[in-house]
Every structure is written in C-alpha cells, then in structure tokens.
Length: 226
Image 1 (cartoon, rainbow, N blue to C red):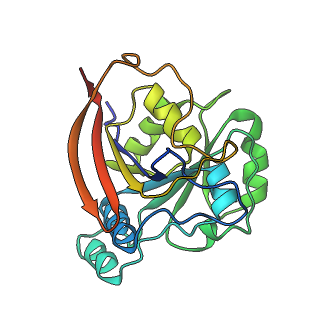
Image 2: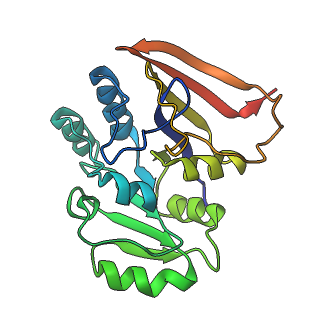
C-alpha cells in the first residue's frame, strides 16, 4: 500500500485572516526572518504544491533560495529543489510563468476534461496527470506517495487550504500571523466556508507558538481535535 505524504499547510496571513490585499501588487506579509524560516521548511520538503490561481496571480519561482540549504539537499542525495506541483481543474495554465522555468521537476494534476488542454499548453515542461472526472485529493496524495514524496508543503492558496482542511487531509498547519489588517472583502483569505471535521467547537492541538521577527508562528495539528 502506498504511503501518503505528511501534508503541511503553510501560509502567512494578516491578523484578520487575509493572505493578500485586493490590489494588483502582492502584499508582503512575512518579515525577513519569516521568509528565511519558510525557505528552511521548503528545503525540508520533498514537494511543494500551489494552486493554479496562486500560480497565475503570484507568478512564483517556488525555489529553495539558500545556497547552503540547496547544497545540503544535494549532499543527502536529493535534488537541489523539491518537486514543484500544481493542480488545475480548468486547465488554465501558461507556459510563460516562471514556475516552469526554474528549479527541477514539475508535476500538474488536472481532470479528464482538461488533460489535453494542459499538455498542449505546457508541452514537455511538466508531467501531467489526471485524477479522473473531478479533482480527487486522495488520488493526488496517493500518486505523490508513489513518486516517493514523504513530506508535502502546501503554499496555497485559500481554496487548496480549505479543501485539504475540510477533507481532514492536513497533518500540520503553519501560520505566520503578520501585524497587519487588510479589511478588504474582495481580498483572498486563508480559509473559506466549509464543513470542517468536528464542527466549530473542535479544538486543534497547538504544537508551537513563537515570535519570528514581527510575525508570530503558530503550528497546529488539525487531525488532533478534541
């Protein structure tokens, strides 16, 4: 039986729960110290996953930035950068995004109806896999486990975080809370409305709380609810 990866959700949010503001420019929520912490978490991961909406909106490279951390990965027999993964049900991906042209291997999960569209758009830039008629997170995690991914870091966006939390598939949440207030109803939030396991009264176990620069890191174990 395939072992699914340990799923870690990572996000920086404002005090009022937003991942960004509603402007065309990305709002930087993390402090310099927290960006470095995230880089360390990336270096410990076997794969990093983001949604296609985040891919289009932020146009990230999604790399391990520290040369020392890349070298340490290589010394352990790993590629310098984790596998980069995205998911798209619509198939709306562009080959011009930076994600495809930096780092090592890339993998796309999509649905049957968009499989041909994604492969045509990307050519040989990524391996493309369908999970069937709809996006099936169980199949996503099974396939990542089959490929040797033991630790999966999910960097958003809010739709992915919401789906994984609602389906009780997240093993850990790491939230960097920034001392900012966004207050814009059209801005993206960390989590949306969903039928979360255990209901509103179920309390997750706190793993850690500490200051990182001017942000506060909160680590929770979502599956350990009481």
